[in-house]
Image (cartoon, rainbow, N blue to C red):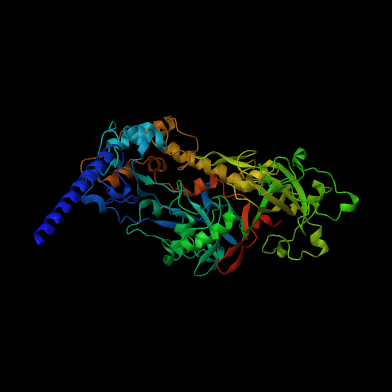
Length: 610
């Protein structure tokens, strides 16, 4: 009996092994056709990050952790440049006037080595490594990638290859760069504290570039915290700071800055919503993924979510609105005057009042403040003459007392106009087509001297650049929004002059670089806009990595922007040339959280006070 059971057991084991062998054989056959399953890929190596994670001289083994501890130096410096005058002395110039009780500050991340690493994508299989980098990334000219592959800055699975290497499934592609992040503006500091010195030097040895930098000023906090509890941290984000790492910004992102201010937040921050980099104001960040999902669902479902923004626009809002797009319908009969005319749109789509019910709508209408009743007889001039008091805002973004006669006179202009992204790479959008979008506007006040109006905007939907696009569509673009009809330094002659002086100074620095005046490079190029011209790369690519030279020293020696700067600090100069942020500010958010309705509000920005 026991012998028979043992025989059956052996047969079962043999059958199982045979079956497993067949499955393994089938799996192996599948793997040969393309990428390995994610669970089977080699995940020992890091996916990239600060430092040099691979070195071809070590074949991706012993050297993997060699430069992983690379420290990054971060400085807080005043926004000023030195102006050379005729007698040879220098005068300091800053964007704010000397009578301003605050000093504008920049957060500067000094250049550091960074490894971009990714697993091969299915569409890359069978293509040469050179073609993949040139076609899929394209930040540099092709000759740069040829040089980077040849000198070991671009590796495949930690090993050096030639330019004709064909990418295979399971390959890990890494690219080591000398990363130059753009400087960002942080919350202001008082001038009475200027004598204090604070440099957040996180490196063991300060580099030469930092020794030549402008004297740092007190950091205080880089970002003002409005509210914090166990679930969320709510901040007043300065313009120019992206919410999370993206593009050329890594350490100069809101998440990194908050984690630096409070190390206990490291790895615990989660997106609830996102503000554009050039937009300032209230930003809600969750401390757990569960809270982020709850608040995010409130925003996506438009359930108890009310958002209020301030914007400063060109002209007398809304007198430039296209009259042919104004909603028209038959006026109620005398006996029906007390009945409310329903809004023509719901969340940017035609309501039942229109034959194209449910389709994206392009129209505008005027409503009152008390009950949102459509005002068919109200003119655009009446909207301009009405004023909303920001001190009376309730959680819904309307005025507190809905029963008062004053509030009854406040008129809102409501615009429904679809929006779409036309270029994902550059983030360019346009109004007039795409997904349905709707925004309501009310006038706060008007400044005759600059011919600009401050408006309160309440987006009903949340499309990319929606408020900016809708204001442009109405003929009143945000006054200093260069991407959508504004002027980058609207009404600020001093900032315009500083921009010109910064460009002139950068040109002098560029001209001092040997051979650069003969090169075909972009005029006044910025480090994140156009990393290098073909001619510059060819000049630098002639430099070969010396025998025994570390990859870190080589990338510093062969960095186009280090070569172009020649030890000069371009951070302030480049910031003065870029947009300092647009006049769009997230003023108030009201969300339905796990503990009920949550309302947060920031201070009114200086540009909205005339």
